[in-house]
Image (cartoon, rainbow, N blue to C red; front, side):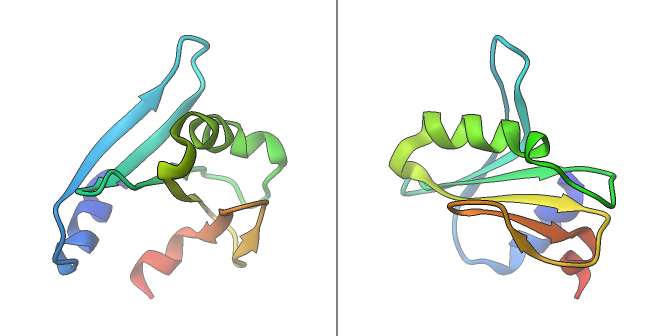
Length: 99
């Protein structure tokens, strides 16, 4: 998924840095994309058709740490619908990357 996202962002004319987030409690986010202004977008990938609020734990943790730098959290999953899961957090079908 990381490599596919790298290919997709080549269309954006911005300098972007890619990171992985993991804290001491092993809460993690698969991909953090940071732009030159320091704004961050967090992406988590789940191979599940159904989601719960627990699936957003890493995104929530990173959101609280990043503060105003956090712009949006996306959980890519194997479902069919884009759904809001709170403030600036969304579940998006993985297939949306190729739509």
